[in-house]
Image (cartoon, rainbow, N blue to C red):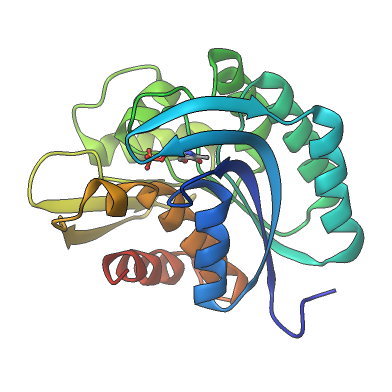
Length: 245
Ligand code: PLP
Protein backbone atom coordinates (compact mmCIF):
# COMPACT_ATOMS: atom_id res chain seq x y z
CA UNK A 1 0.00 0.00 0.00
CA UNK A 2 1.02 3.62 -0.36
CA UNK A 3 1.12 5.65 2.85
CA UNK A 4 -2.00 7.84 3.13
CA UNK A 5 -1.81 8.57 -0.58
CA UNK A 6 1.89 9.42 -0.51
CA UNK A 7 4.39 7.45 -2.58
CA UNK A 8 6.79 5.31 -0.56
CA UNK A 9 10.59 5.47 -0.69
CA UNK A 10 12.82 2.95 1.08
CA UNK A 11 16.37 3.84 2.05
CA UNK A 12 18.78 0.97 2.71
CA UNK A 13 21.96 2.18 4.38
CA UNK A 14 23.86 3.02 7.53
CA UNK A 15 22.60 4.87 10.59
CA UNK A 16 24.50 8.11 11.27
CA UNK A 17 24.44 9.06 14.95
CA UNK A 18 24.78 12.77 14.12
CA UNK A 19 22.06 12.50 11.45
CA UNK A 20 23.68 14.59 8.71
CA UNK A 21 24.18 11.53 6.48
CA UNK A 22 22.87 7.98 6.25
CA UNK A 23 19.28 6.91 6.78
CA UNK A 24 18.46 9.71 9.22
CA UNK A 25 19.30 12.31 6.57
CA UNK A 26 17.45 10.35 3.88
CA UNK A 27 14.27 10.18 5.99
CA UNK A 28 14.36 13.93 6.61
CA UNK A 29 14.75 14.57 2.88
CA UNK A 30 11.88 12.20 2.03
CA UNK A 31 9.63 14.03 4.51
CA UNK A 32 10.64 17.46 3.18
CA UNK A 33 9.81 16.41 -0.39
CA UNK A 34 6.49 14.85 0.66
CA UNK A 35 7.02 11.12 0.24
CA UNK A 36 6.68 8.50 2.97
CA UNK A 37 10.11 7.21 4.02
CA UNK A 38 10.93 3.71 5.26
CA UNK A 39 14.38 2.47 6.23
CA UNK A 40 16.40 -0.74 6.46
CA UNK A 41 19.63 -0.27 8.40
CA UNK A 42 22.79 -2.06 7.29
CA UNK A 43 25.09 -0.80 10.07
CA UNK A 44 25.10 1.37 13.15
CA UNK A 45 27.80 4.02 13.24
CA UNK A 46 29.09 6.21 16.05
CA UNK A 47 30.08 9.47 14.36
CA UNK A 48 30.07 13.22 14.15
CA UNK A 49 30.99 15.24 11.04
CA UNK A 50 34.71 15.01 11.91
CA UNK A 51 35.07 11.28 12.62
CA UNK A 52 33.44 7.86 12.57
CA UNK A 53 34.63 6.15 15.73
CA UNK A 54 32.81 2.81 15.51
CA UNK A 55 30.84 0.76 12.98
CA UNK A 56 28.66 -2.18 13.95
CA UNK A 57 27.16 -3.98 10.93
CA UNK A 58 23.69 -5.40 11.56
CA UNK A 59 23.27 -9.15 11.12
CA UNK A 60 22.16 -10.41 7.72
CA UNK A 61 19.08 -11.96 9.39
CA UNK A 62 18.09 -8.56 10.81
CA UNK A 63 18.61 -6.76 7.49
CA UNK A 64 16.66 -9.48 5.67
CA UNK A 65 13.76 -9.09 8.13
CA UNK A 66 13.77 -5.28 7.84
CA UNK A 67 13.56 -5.37 4.05
CA UNK A 68 10.88 -8.07 4.07
CA UNK A 69 8.82 -6.15 6.65
CA UNK A 70 8.66 -3.15 4.32
CA UNK A 71 7.88 -5.06 1.12
CA UNK A 72 5.27 -7.23 2.91
CA UNK A 73 3.20 -4.12 3.62
CA UNK A 74 4.09 -1.25 1.28
CA UNK A 75 4.15 -0.66 -2.47
CA UNK A 76 7.64 0.80 -2.64
CA UNK A 77 7.98 3.24 -5.53
CA UNK A 78 11.72 3.89 -5.23
CA UNK A 79 14.56 2.32 -3.26
CA UNK A 80 17.72 4.27 -2.50
CA UNK A 81 20.83 2.46 -1.26
CA UNK A 82 23.76 4.03 0.60
CA UNK A 83 26.33 2.46 2.96
CA UNK A 84 26.31 -1.31 2.37
CA UNK A 85 29.36 -2.43 4.43
CA UNK A 86 30.63 -5.56 2.66
CA UNK A 87 30.01 -8.26 0.03
CA UNK A 88 27.54 -10.22 2.18
CA UNK A 89 25.32 -7.20 2.82
CA UNK A 90 25.50 -6.16 -0.85
CA UNK A 91 24.62 -9.68 -2.00
CA UNK A 92 21.63 -9.87 0.34
CA UNK A 93 20.30 -6.44 -0.65
CA UNK A 94 20.75 -7.23 -4.35
CA UNK A 95 19.00 -10.60 -4.11
CA UNK A 96 16.06 -9.15 -2.14
CA UNK A 97 15.62 -6.18 -4.47
CA UNK A 98 15.77 -8.46 -7.49
CA UNK A 99 13.07 -10.64 -5.93
CA UNK A 100 10.79 -8.07 -4.26
CA UNK A 101 11.19 -4.67 -5.92
CA UNK A 102 9.76 -3.77 -9.31
CA UNK A 103 10.08 0.02 -8.93
CA UNK A 104 13.03 2.32 -9.47
CA UNK A 105 16.43 2.01 -7.77
CA UNK A 106 18.90 4.79 -6.99
CA UNK A 107 22.30 3.41 -5.96
CA UNK A 108 24.64 5.81 -4.17
CA UNK A 109 27.85 3.75 -4.31
CA UNK A 110 29.13 5.02 -0.97
CA UNK A 111 32.70 3.82 -0.31
CA UNK A 112 34.59 6.15 2.04
CA UNK A 113 33.34 8.96 4.32
CA UNK A 114 34.77 12.47 3.96
CA UNK A 115 36.40 11.83 7.34
CA UNK A 116 38.27 8.89 5.75
CA UNK A 117 36.48 5.84 7.13
CA UNK A 118 35.69 2.91 4.80
CA UNK A 119 31.94 2.36 4.45
CA UNK A 120 32.24 -0.48 1.90
CA UNK A 121 35.16 -2.90 1.76
CA UNK A 122 36.83 -4.13 -1.46
CA UNK A 123 34.71 -7.29 -1.58
CA UNK A 124 31.69 -5.03 -1.26
CA UNK A 125 32.81 -2.94 -4.23
CA UNK A 126 33.14 -6.09 -6.35
CA UNK A 127 29.70 -7.35 -5.24
CA UNK A 128 28.20 -3.94 -5.95
CA UNK A 129 29.52 -4.07 -9.53
CA UNK A 130 28.36 -7.62 -10.09
CA UNK A 131 24.98 -7.73 -8.40
CA UNK A 132 23.54 -4.33 -7.47
CA UNK A 133 24.55 -1.88 -10.20
CA UNK A 134 22.90 -4.01 -12.92
CA UNK A 135 19.56 -3.45 -11.11
CA UNK A 136 19.96 0.33 -10.78
CA UNK A 137 17.92 3.01 -12.53
CA UNK A 138 20.52 5.60 -11.56
CA UNK A 139 24.02 5.34 -10.03
CA UNK A 140 25.32 8.48 -8.24
CA UNK A 141 29.10 8.26 -7.70
CA UNK A 142 31.31 11.15 -6.67
CA UNK A 143 34.59 11.54 -8.59
CA UNK A 144 36.52 9.17 -6.30
CA UNK A 145 33.85 6.47 -6.46
CA UNK A 146 33.60 6.81 -10.25
CA UNK A 147 37.38 6.29 -10.51
CA UNK A 148 37.09 3.09 -8.46
CA UNK A 149 34.17 1.83 -10.58
CA UNK A 150 36.03 2.62 -13.80
CA UNK A 151 39.31 1.22 -12.48
CA UNK A 152 41.26 4.31 -13.58
CA UNK A 153 41.82 7.88 -12.45
CA UNK A 154 39.59 10.56 -13.96
CA UNK A 155 41.06 13.28 -16.13
CA UNK A 156 37.87 14.43 -17.84
CA UNK A 157 34.60 14.22 -15.88
CA UNK A 158 32.30 14.27 -18.91
CA UNK A 159 34.01 11.37 -20.66
CA UNK A 160 34.19 9.48 -17.33
CA UNK A 161 30.41 9.87 -16.85
CA UNK A 162 29.74 8.69 -20.41
CA UNK A 163 32.15 5.77 -20.14
CA UNK A 164 30.71 4.63 -16.82
CA UNK A 165 27.14 4.89 -18.04
CA UNK A 166 28.00 2.92 -21.20
CA UNK A 167 29.89 0.29 -19.24
CA UNK A 168 27.09 -0.19 -16.70
CA UNK A 169 24.23 0.28 -19.16
CA UNK A 170 22.62 2.51 -16.52
CA UNK A 171 22.09 6.24 -16.03
CA UNK A 172 24.92 7.86 -14.06
CA UNK A 173 24.98 11.12 -12.12
CA UNK A 174 28.63 12.00 -11.58
CA UNK A 175 28.64 14.36 -8.59
CA UNK A 176 31.17 17.16 -8.78
CA UNK A 177 31.19 17.98 -5.07
CA UNK A 178 34.76 16.75 -4.58
CA UNK A 179 36.23 18.82 -7.44
CA UNK A 180 38.18 22.08 -7.11
CA UNK A 181 36.84 25.54 -7.92
CA UNK A 182 33.89 27.79 -7.09
CA UNK A 183 31.46 26.29 -9.60
CA UNK A 184 30.56 22.63 -9.17
CA UNK A 185 29.17 20.56 -12.00
CA UNK A 186 27.09 17.42 -11.64
CA UNK A 187 26.86 15.44 -14.90
CA UNK A 188 23.86 13.27 -15.72
CA UNK A 189 24.45 10.73 -18.45
CA UNK A 190 21.32 8.75 -19.21
CA UNK A 191 21.20 5.24 -20.61
CA UNK A 192 20.67 6.65 -24.15
CA UNK A 193 24.04 8.41 -23.88
CA UNK A 194 22.63 11.95 -23.51
CA UNK A 195 24.49 14.17 -21.05
CA UNK A 196 23.12 17.09 -19.04
CA UNK A 197 25.16 19.43 -16.87
CA UNK A 198 23.88 20.89 -13.61
CA UNK A 199 26.15 23.64 -12.35
CA UNK A 200 25.91 25.44 -9.04
CA UNK A 201 28.12 27.62 -6.91
CA UNK A 202 30.12 26.09 -4.11
CA UNK A 203 28.41 27.12 -0.89
CA UNK A 204 30.43 28.48 2.05
CA UNK A 205 29.19 25.57 4.13
CA UNK A 206 30.56 24.43 7.46
CA UNK A 207 31.81 20.86 7.96
CA UNK A 208 28.44 20.05 9.57
CA UNK A 209 26.47 21.36 6.58
CA UNK A 210 28.73 19.57 4.06
CA UNK A 211 28.45 16.26 5.89
CA UNK A 212 26.02 13.96 4.06
CA UNK A 213 25.43 16.17 1.01
CA UNK A 214 26.05 13.19 -1.32
CA UNK A 215 23.51 11.07 0.59
CA UNK A 216 20.94 13.86 0.58
CA UNK A 217 21.29 14.56 -3.15
CA UNK A 218 20.67 10.87 -3.95
CA UNK A 219 17.70 10.63 -1.56
CA UNK A 220 16.17 13.84 -2.95
CA UNK A 221 16.38 12.33 -6.45
CA UNK A 222 14.74 9.14 -5.17
CA UNK A 223 11.92 11.18 -3.60
CA UNK A 224 11.33 13.29 -6.72
CA UNK A 225 11.28 10.14 -8.87
CA UNK A 226 8.73 8.62 -6.48
CA UNK A 227 6.63 11.78 -6.83
CA UNK A 228 6.55 11.18 -10.59
CA UNK A 229 9.34 13.35 -12.02
CA UNK A 230 11.35 12.24 -15.03
CA UNK A 231 15.00 11.57 -14.25
CA UNK A 232 16.45 14.89 -15.46
CA UNK A 233 13.67 16.86 -13.70
CA UNK A 234 14.28 14.91 -10.51
CA UNK A 235 18.01 15.69 -10.67
CA UNK A 236 17.45 19.40 -11.43
CA UNK A 237 15.01 19.79 -8.54
CA UNK A 238 17.27 17.87 -6.19
CA UNK A 239 20.31 20.02 -7.00
CA UNK A 240 18.17 23.10 -6.21
CA UNK A 241 16.80 21.45 -3.05
CA UNK A 242 20.33 20.84 -1.76
CA UNK A 243 21.42 24.41 -2.51
CA UNK A 244 18.49 25.77 -0.53
CA UNK A 245 18.94 23.60 2.55
N1 PLP B 1 27.79 7.76 7.44
C1 PLP B 1 26.89 7.13 6.70
C2 PLP B 1 25.98 6.15 7.36
C3 PLP B 1 26.83 7.40 5.33
O1 PLP B 1 25.93 6.76 4.57
C4 PLP B 1 27.72 8.34 4.75
C5 PLP B 1 27.70 8.66 3.33
O2 PLP B 1 27.05 8.07 2.54
C6 PLP B 1 28.63 8.97 5.58
C7 PLP B 1 28.64 8.66 6.91
C8 PLP B 1 29.64 9.94 5.06
O3 PLP B 1 29.15 11.17 4.80
P1 PLP B 1 30.17 12.33 4.39
O4 PLP B 1 31.19 11.72 3.52
O5 PLP B 1 29.33 13.33 3.67
O6 PLP B 1 30.73 12.87 5.66
